[in-house]
Image 1 (cartoon, protein in one colour):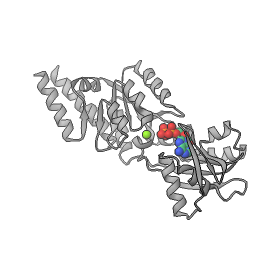
Image 2: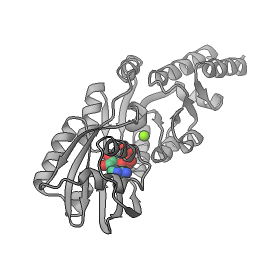
Image 3: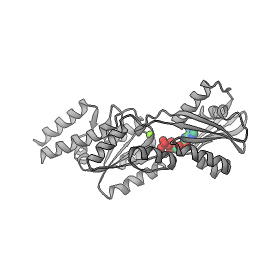
Length: 288
Ligand code: ADP
Ligand code: MG
């Protein structure tokens, strides 16, 4: 009977770490035509590591100032900068009055002088980064590295580049989705060059520089051509997870993402996205 097949699909999924909040989610998942993925923490591990520290204009204190500023943030980039600064033995500088600018960066007073760490785009808009500095940042981004600008007073002290590796099974997951006739797009707040490097390696489309409301609008747009699944882990993804026909949270994601989503992948395997859709398709095919 219908309820029995649904119930057995829900429990078969649960045994493999594929949670779905009820039969309506299975029905919607069977109709998905396109899957949208957040990048950081979803397609990648979400544990970036610092690869380059580039001094600008002979400044030597970029790393120490960055660590002092990032002490006021819990962003994955902040955690990576703090770890690198302490491994390099950068001096600890006093900081206060940190302010987070979502999707842009963080600011604080370091040694009593305004300072910050932010995206090259934001630094550029604030008149803090030279053409040469912006060019170097762009080169690092072309290598697939997220790059941030460290500034103090009215000038940039340096650039810090960070790499966050794709999860090992991401290429296989994309092969499976493609074989199932599904589209796959990255929606990220990171810059377009880093997004392109990751997306290109996985054969995916991408949209970059997205704030939470932009991700939501993108899901709406994708819905015009069929059912959309959104897979994410962050607070930033919550509006998009809610808007999608099926919102899927990574098990290691934030509580907000897990609460908002219709479904969850407890083992953080990207291939489980395809497994979840296959399970839903099989279940609905048996009912019809
Ligand atoms: P994502 O979608 O990758 O999680 P976010 O919206 O969190 O992106 O951030 C977008 C961009 O804003 C980052 O790539 C970075 O340039 C900048 N940014 C955000 N938070 C921080 C931070 N704590 N330190 C430095 N840069 C930051
Ligand atoms: Mg994320």
